Amino acid sequence: MAAALSTNAKIGLAVGAVVFVLLFFKLIAGFIRFCFRHPFIFILLLLCGGLGFIFNFLLAGVAILAVVGGGLAFFVLNEFNG
Image (cartoon, rainbow, N blue to C red; front, side):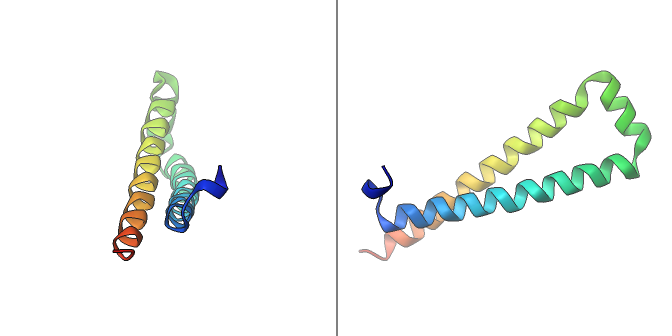
């Protein structure tokens, strides 16, 4: 399948993957930092089941940003082929 992709599509996928990896690790670090800075909110969310919901909500945001970043890179590179 990789052989059937154009160079611009490969670059778009690479940009999307890099954006996802960077934002994912930033999300993990920020989430751990939040849990240590606000232990009362952390325990409240943990007991009420909101901790997983918030993490999944933020992870979906990271995935959306990665798709938009990769799509934008693909769109910009595709415009240069004219």
